[in-house]
Length: 179
Image (cartoon, rainbow, N blue to C red):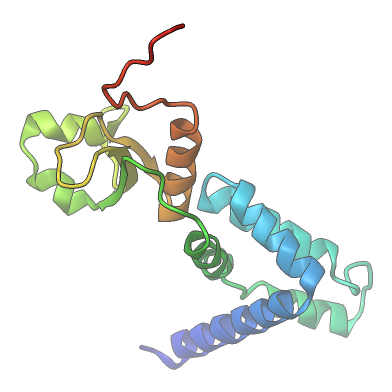
């Protein structure tokens, strides 16, 4: 790795660490970022909205001086994907797994290893699409549905599965008699 590349990585890690530290230590900002990630459906929208939030809260944004330029330069190194990952982990840890659902990740290589007929389940517009998926599946049984996805992160697959299974009634085999 070149010195320039190492310096860039160092700046990115430091800027991201400081941004995460300030987000986590300001309750209003923490809750706002958590809500952004929770309500997003993918990395791109979550990252863009967090960046917008941070830029809106920049007290030097309107200035035209050395400090404004320096802060803007440092802010350009923030790795918003890492900030999203951090909050996805927080959300995922507090989210229960819906009954009768399995969440799984499919890599491009795993999709290619499948028989051609099965690969079609993991294609979007004819393109093999890695990501997180979910399907209906009781423990120890084969899936009872096609995979649903892909999602950028496990949390978003989990959230979608929970939303979809909320209104599904599982037939337990017992019919109630009307009086």
